[in-house]
Image 1 (tube, rainbow, N blue to C red):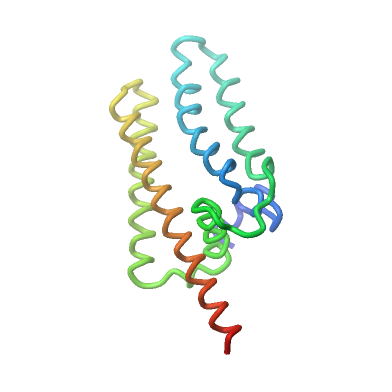
Image 2 (cartoon, rainbow, N blue to C red):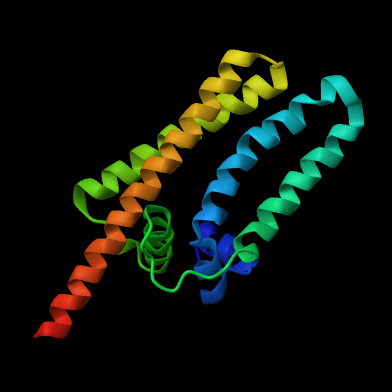
Length: 165
């Protein structure tokens, strides 16, 4: 079992949890947690060790988030299709082929570089690497959701084609 599989299992990502996580409110409030975490970490300069309480609150939210919203049974929104596609990808990575696999790797690279810049900016308390790193993380994740949504739509077309035969 790979790291992401272990993480999903440890986070309690059952079929019901995936349906709840596909709710657009779940997706967008997880994105909102990025600036909240940045502010929580940066706040160490103003409130000292109490910043750990703010960081803990954001972490608790990230753990609770995939279970907090109404389940989406039929993914109609862009975000819901992306999360359903992510679930498919985690179950069978071979579904992403050729150039799509290269783009997935590129997105992981972009997101990782963004995370490194973000971490550096937060440690050094420098605005430009923090903002640029967060921007790379967010753009990489948005693009990844879009690609995984395309994977979900393609799988649905294959399912409909197989049922029609």
